[in-house]
Length: 525
Ligand SMILES: *[C@@H]1O[C@H](CO)[C@@H](O)[C@H](O)[C@H]1NC(C)=O
Ligand SMILES: *[C@@H]1O[C@H](CO)[C@@H](O)[C@H](O)[C@H]1NC(C)=O
Ligand SMILES: *[C@@H]1O[C@H](CO)[C@@H](O)[C@H](O)[C@H]1NC(C)=O
Ligand SMILES: *[C@@H]1O[C@H](CO)[C@@H](O)[C@H](O)[C@H]1NC(C)=O
Ligand SMILES: *[C@@H]1O[C@H](CO)[C@@H](O)[C@H](O)[C@H]1NC(C)=O
Image 1 (cartoon, helix red, strand yellow):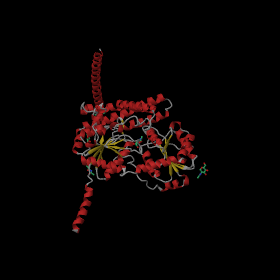
Image 2: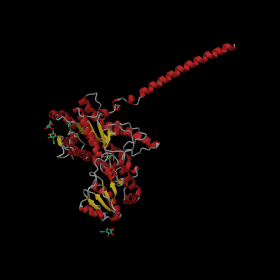
Image 3: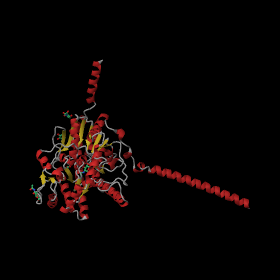
Image 4: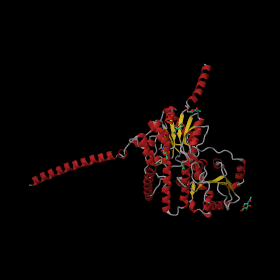
């Protein structure tokens, strides 16, 4: 009997790992900063024993060889990098010339055109895969369990359809804008469109702005980006396939945000929030950095990083920032790769790279000066450090406006920056305790959940592998026409019934009245 129960225990212990099914996952990522996030997922999937294959172009910037995955390289010449670099310099230029609204519009169109070019190139790359028979055969024979894609570019979605694979999206943007707008009801009365820098409490004029921006961005996106995919689908899938419904047909949407960041809004059963999945507890700092941090004493340290791509700001702005830092008793660690500012104070340490997560987790860190990029805001929420925001481009202003609304950040316009404005703002975030308190509260809310975001993401990926997709979680909404979706036909029919029965009743009553009056008249006479 003892043996038997011991055997049972051993058996049940052994059966635990058998629940972890090793899957074959095909990944179609987006290059650039999006890849950094995808890699976090891939690393975790690898550590759980999944076999991962990544599709990349020969001219990719960040997707390097790694023991975590095998890869398929599609030969694309030297295209990608040139365009990404162009895009970045135009975005920066746009900031410098922001004085005239007209220039802003011109640059906006220029940025759209460049993005359009990148989408075109993605379609071209996907076409190359489709038309390479050996490659397609090997993809088909590999028997993948699912495809993991970032739908900011549509390649992965198209390939998943072609191969008939379940599709999981690692998503914040689709080709047509913020991802919720693609699948969940999004009443424009309280769901601000990203880019409008609005909140969930809008005045009448703000609601007008929200609606206008919604239609404008929708038009721009489908006009500049959508048509590449439309042509692609026309050519390879036939006229019946609407490209955007291929996106909407995804099994699971792993959203890179959550409701500590987002305003409350309707969502869907196949949406899984994994905001902050890239965050980790901090590790101890390297000795020299720790010494510098400790030397700040009771004043603490300020850390500043404007991301990988915008490391070198324009000289005159860096001088102003350095001058403001020099007037503070705090120590400053500044990730800066450009020339040394002439006004640099002796409390400021310039570094080429810094362990951002470990610094944010350090108890002496008081303020994070950030541009609102991919990991910065999430890591600041994770560790509860208030932000002084200097947004530069893309969705960064909008990201920071959400933090400002929650009272966890102060946001400055980098084009009108001088030392006194910057110093004033820094002092406010440093000495007004509300910023820190609000951020700590937000951090607490972020941590108070049953499962870590990364575990949740991996659970749902494995769920799709185990169950060969999740079609029972997909709604029918996107298969409907506008009229059906909004029940316009039903409302019109019911309205018709009411009107016709009302008319009949009116006729009947009139008839009755006429007869009564007629009778009365007859009696009187
Ligand atoms: C993963 O799958 C590929 C393709 O089928 C195979 O070549 C490779 O050896 C596998 N890797 C592991 C670690 O099983
Ligand atoms: C990709 O683009 C190149 C250059 O624009 C063009 O020559 C080629 O035909 C395109 N390939 C496909 C498969 O569309
Ligand atoms: C097709 O794909 C195979 C395998 O990835 C590759 O070796 C070959 O060069 C490709 N052919 C063309 C024409 O791109
Ligand atoms: C740093 O500069 C301040 C004033 O600019 C000066 O008072 C202080 O002594 C300097 N500290 C060191 C360590 O040089
Ligand atoms: C804005 O925030 C979201 C959610 O945290 C993040 O996914 C996105 O990458 C951020 N934007 C930029 C430009 O980094």
